[in-house]
Amino acid sequence: MLSVLALTSVVLLGIVSQTTAIVVYTSWEKHALVGTDVRLSCSFFSWQWTSPDVTFSWQYRADGAKEGISIFHFAGGAPYQDSKGPFRDRLEFVGNPSRRDGSILIKNVDFGDNGTFTCDAKNPPDIAGHPSSVRLLVFEKVPVQAGVITGAIIGVVLGLLILIVAIYYLMRFLVARRVFSLSMSKHGKKGKGKEGSQQKQASAVMDPAKLKAAASEKKKQESRREKK
Amino acid sequence: MLAILLATLVLHLTDLIILFVSTCANAWRKHGDASYDLWYACKQSNGDYECSVTGDADWLQAVQALMVLATIFSLISFIIFLCQLFTLVKGGRFFFTAVFQVLASLFVMSGAIIYTVMSPAWKNDSETYGYAFVLAWLAFPLTLISGFIYIVLRKKE
Image 1 (cartoon, rainbow over the protein chains, first blue to last red):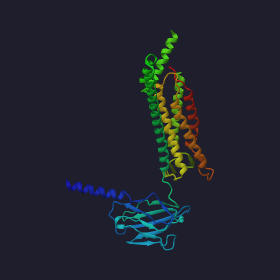
Image 2 (spheres, helix red, strand yellow):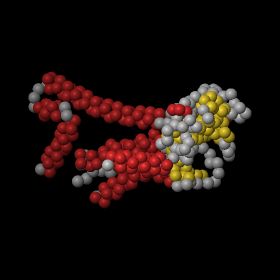
Image 3 (cartoon, one colour):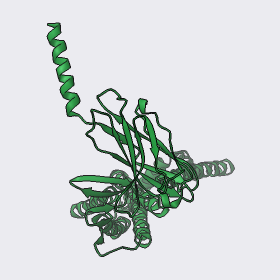
Image 4 (tube, rainbow over the protein chains, first blue to last red):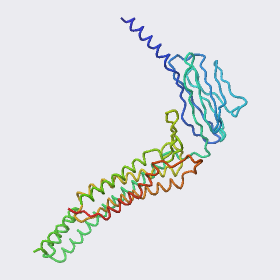
């Protein structure tokens, strides 16, 4: 029973490893300042063990060019740099093939290095797969990151909105308190009678909602008196 | 009376939907199969979409912010309208609602103007403005009219 299970799992693994291909990973885009060094990373996933014949090759296609040129190749355990092309003496292999890392370092980038770098990795017998590309963008000064200005504008406007609403309610509260203190002082100087109704009003204005209710009540009372 | 209320509500909802679509759909400029702005630059190749984030242009981020703010303000105005419908004194005007709706229309106008003025010159004839751009310009007069209606509208029993 156990041997049958082991056999089926080995067969399945064999089938799976033959149907899936090698998957190469690079970054999507790389931003760099003029004159700096930029590291283009490339790694892969494969169901096979890392073979000693693993190969990495890098191609470069400039912006606007139709075809790419080969700039780097790693095979048989040794790296081979391009000694005639635009990257001579500027390319360095900083990867670790036994750890499935085929990254390269380009020193002293310039505006002419704008373009697409394609990494293709092969891990025999796993050789079928898509190469992966990374775009290099060289800037004179680092641009503001996408979304910073957007977030700033939205945050400032919403903050102002909340501030204005808070100040509005604060002013209403303060005005109501001032009216309360004014009518209290009037009540202290004169006496009762008419001021009795004012005192009622003064206690009502502590709550602005009740102020509105009092005003509408007064209007209703006046309209009733007019009707009478 | 009820007809006016329903018409106003329908207009406000239409504004809200137009603002949402214009802000979220990524079709302010079209070039054949590729659609650009407001958030991505997408190209269609072999039935697969290849999208990259649009360039970090400052004016584009300002347009993004203004469109989002216009949508938020229109939404707030709608909620305040529903609140004021039940709490307003008889004969009162919907000032709070109108303020937010007019502000939303101003934001949409600013966003559309900035985009129209600052978008780069077209390289060839196959570049056109997309439907999201048209919707943004449509949203501006609709929200303004809706705001003015709220200023004039009075609450009756």
